[in-house]
Image 1 (tube, rainbow, N blue to C red):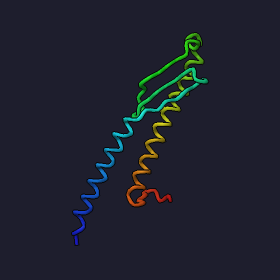
Image 2 (cartoon, rainbow, N blue to C red; image 1 turned 90 degrees about the horizontal axis):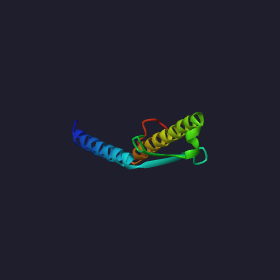
Image 3 (spheres, rainbow, N blue to C red; image 1 turned 90 degrees about the vertical axis):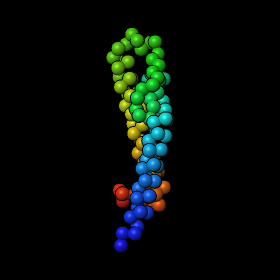
Image 4 (cartoon, rainbow, N blue to C red; image 1 turned 60 degrees about the vertical axis):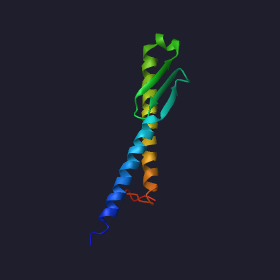
Length: 105
């Protein structure tokens, strides 16, 4: 009656291992965004942490524009990281024989 529990445990272990590999892969990626026609260039890692920032010198005299462009760049970078996480997770679910807990096809 419970003969398949061992197989389920192995499948669960495999899923955990795949999730760990996916997390490591996501964290190793970098994403770059530009704002203000390239006046701001921001690079973040897969965790969403800023790892590089380049600001055009002309913006240093215009605090308001600098703030607006930085916020835009940070929001764009955050969205890229989140979209990548979501796409990778859905790809992993697709690799499990079409298992999709959300019911979408």
